[in-house]
Structure formats: C-alpha cells, structure tokens
Image (cartoon, rainbow, N blue to C red; front, side):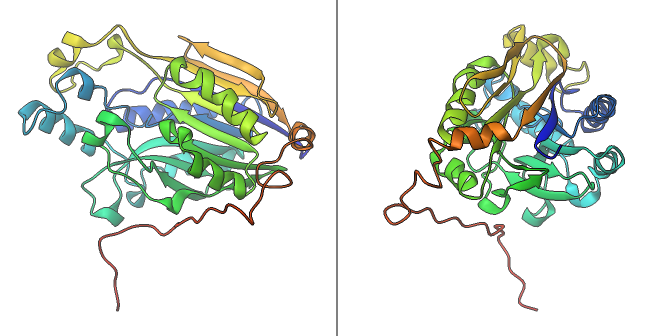
Length: 316
C-alpha cells in the first residue's frame, strides 16, 4: 500500500512560551497518533514554544522598552536548540512508532551564535532522523521584531512511500518562488504550517493544491486568552488588549484537484485524520503539471541558493 498515506493534523495549543511543557504535548500527540497507525503527523508554525502574540498587544515596535526586552529574553530562553538535544525525545518517538513528523519550532541555532531565533519547520523521518530544518525566509510584519530571516538551506523535499513531501511556514506559502522550488524538486504533498486561523488557510490551501496539483495539508495552532500561563512576564499588559480568541485553528486538507478533503476545522483541539491516495496526484497531473509537461524551462528557470548562511567561515 505504498500509494496510501495516513496523516494526522495536530491542531493543538502550546503551553505558551514554555518549551518543556509544550514538547510534552507534542509527545502526547505523537503517542495518540501512533494508536491510529498514522504515518505522518504535522504540527503548526512555531508551536514550540508558541507564537509571539505580545508584539501586537504590548507596543512591540516601541524602542528599547523593558516590557519588550524582558518578553523577548523569556522567548529566547524557551526556544529550541537542536544541537543541545531539545528534539531528541521527539526523534526517538518517530523511530519507535515509525511516524514521520513536521514540527514548527522557534529555533535558537548555535550556527548563528545562539542568541537570535528563527521560525523553523523541522522534518523528522520515520527512522527518527532530522532531515531538514527550514528557517522561515521572511518573517511577516511584526514577527520581524523577534524572528530573524532564514535562508534556503531547508528548501528540501522528502520521500515517504510513493509521496514526496515539502513544507513552508505561514505567509511564505504566498511566495511564488519558494513554492516553485519545491514543485521543481518533485513535491506532491505540500505542508503549510500556520500559527492559526481560517483566514490564513481557507483560500491558499485550495489555491496551492490547484496550482501544483498536489495534496496540501494546512495545520494551525490554537490560542485563547485563557491559555496564557499565569507566570508569563507582563501578563497583565498582554491580557489588557488580548482578544478572547487569538488563533481559531483552521487546519484542513485540499486534494490535487483543489477541492476540500477536510474543510477548515475551527475551535477544536485534537488530531484530524485522513488517508491520501497517490493515484489522485497522477490523475490530476494529466492535464496540468507546473514543472513537467506544462512548463517551459527554455524560457523561465529558477536558481536556488541552499547554502546555510553564517557570519563566519573556518579556513582551518
């Protein structure tokens, strides 16, 4: 049954800005998915340890304020450093249960000095090995006040049974050229991760599916004002302007014809299951294939720099 793939969309809320407790929720979701014989589980953007909602609620663009500095420092301390083994348990679970994983994290990488953070999408294969870490190319709007821009190193695809998986973070799904890069590498299951809300997923999920003639899995987080932990720095200032619902979910799946397989799911925490059939990809590529028979590489081509960027290079 290599042409069938059972997937789970993990629409859950973080234990906000608490890396260890949020990782426990991720682990529990993987355990739950394993009982349903899931082969791929996907989590939302920046789930570990959560989206920087304070930026829009506490005057995040105000220069040199104590509130923003202290919240940022708290965020960085709870970010994920892969080199220090923060995802080791997740990798072991992937191997133990033979489940591939796409996980959205806030990454604090040592190869960039260990003080800045990136919105990264990590792919772990069924052997428990991290195959790619895609750092979001361009943080959106106020995200730029806390996240750093990434690079092309993580623009990679991964084989899983008959399928070829690739993924992007949030609004970079709207960027035509990164999408085209993944299409050109043979992607036929596109993973789109979001911090939450159907206003992000309801249009682009079907659009990408119709453009690429691939399956598109959009996975969002949830977040309500009641989810902010009491120990959050400057919680009173955050809650003063926070709406009751900050992310309502909106996780969904579109088929290679652009039609819904799972319509956006709102206000519901848990796992959403579906089985993909690879034959549907081949059927829809018969009349349109954006990098195959319906392409003109003699007229337009895309160049991709996948070098991991750093401020230093060692010559020894």
